[in-house]
Image 1 (cartoon, rainbow over the protein chains, first blue to last red):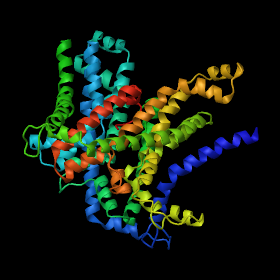
Image 2 (image 1 turned 180 degrees about the horizontal axis):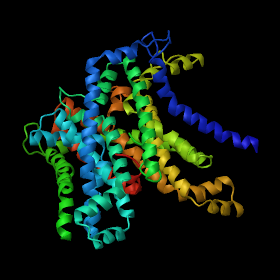
Image 3 (image 1 turned 30 degrees about the vertical axis):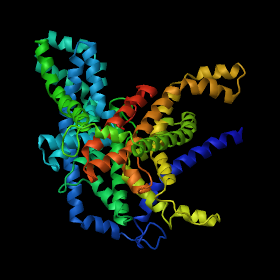
Image 4 (image 1 turned 60 degrees about the vertical axis):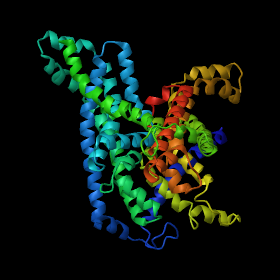
Length: 267
Length: 270
């Protein structure tokens, strides 16, 4: 019996070690004074100093964050409208069509989204840069918000709305005093997801960003293409800590809204 | 009154659908019929059916297939064992967390790990095999991709296993089936939807992710995604790029049809 219990634990440990090893490998060498990702020479914080003294990099981080916040706010607003629209549509066929169209951007590969948006922006004449990246991020975040908000709307009892109407609430009051408070956890979860997708996105941004504007992911890619540089390692340690913070934040938000409903794997 | 407010909600949302879902798809289709000068042509489709592009498509599918199979081989036992642990939701969360780390950073880590002086080569040297060229090979591409996609495969399988009624497994054992027979004829068939969803979540990105190939495999591996990126951003041949994109979309629809639609809500965009 004892022996039987052991193998599963060993197998799971190996999987966990493999999953985390590369991440900790990166973080470990961010303290290497030798400047390479092998042969640890001595402890140094030079690479972190370099990150924080690099004004260009800090501007990029700022751009990335501003872009993520803006796109999350706008896509949350459009997404909530979308969820309400889908909810209020009476015909089942139209509802299903809307839902399928909503999911197109969720299942489409990033290259397709990036390439098609590049064509779109070029045709409409939007200059590639901050605006195009912001619009692209809003566009691919909207369906995620819809997916997060819709279940909350559907679980809401229609009697609540009827009661409010019977008691004399106007249409706007029903929305602001009954519906929105009820779906607030879903809205927060949607906003949060939109924020992290935007912060994390590389492929779509890579297509629609021009020469002047860069986000952190694109910058990491161009740095990594030039080979190993321990500044990336230092940067990745910082990003890892921020990510863990965001995951914990999301965990508490979704605990309030009951269960890890939308918590999925992501790229 | 009712219809009025409904239209109001629909307006911004349908505007978004028209501009960012329907228009881009239409434009990709339109561009696939144009040449470098913007004139109508069927040449791109002709070019796609030459040996160069067919070979590319075939090898892209072959790599995606390998990646999906290896991910499944690692992920299924992991998911199965996870459902048997105490605090399984916590362990699952720990499996998911690495997938939240920026993909580029994880790929970049392998530049060091697989490097000429990296730990893997040091290990090979100790083992007496001697250092090997690991980076910029298709082997490292498959390995890194499997590493990236394991959580994507584990999650839907875990969910399927978690929903499985344990009394069905008990019944099978009570009726005299061995663990292997129970697995083959009871557990696996009942969780096949999870496996399908996982394969879908792995297969489609494997066809399209271009950054893993660019960083890890150099020019050794070209996938459909790499080819699209190449045509749009390097050679500026949008017509050809759009044509490959059309075929990637067709491939995606076929895969989704084969694997069922369940995967869609399980994970993130592919």
